[in-house]
Image (cartoon, rainbow, N blue to C red; front, side, top):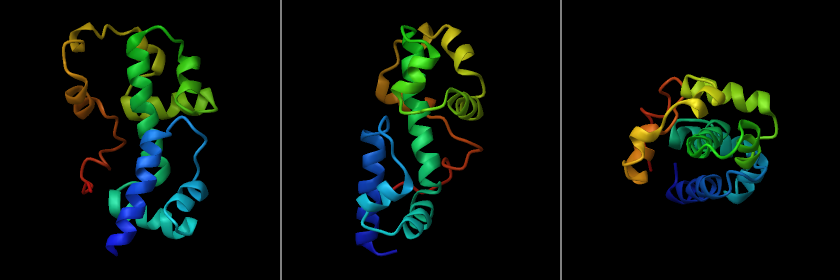
Length: 139
C-alpha cells in the first residue's frame, strides 16, 4: 500500500471518529479518501483489519455505551444520538459487540468505573466483535 493511500484512509477514519452521528456510507467515505468505493473498502480492511461499516458501528456503540452509562437518555434517544436509524439494528449490533442488550447495559450500576479516567476507560471498554480488531495493526 502506498503511503499516500494510508494518509487518505486515515482521513476517512478520522471522519468516522468525528462525524459518527452523521449518515455515513462507503461511497461518502470513499470520496473523503479520494478512492473508488470498492478500492476504499478493500484498502480500509487491509490497513485497519475491519470493514469501514464495522469500524463505524464500533465507534457508534462505543459512544452509545458512554451515553447509556450517564443514564439520562432512553435507549431510543441514544440510538438516534449516535447516528443509527433503526432501533432494531442498533440493539442487535450493540448486543453482538457488548454481550448484553442496551437496556440491560443502561440498567447496570456503572459507579465502580466512575473514578477511572476516560482515556483509560476507552482502552478497556471499546467494543470488538469476535476479536477481529484487537489483532489488527493500528496505524
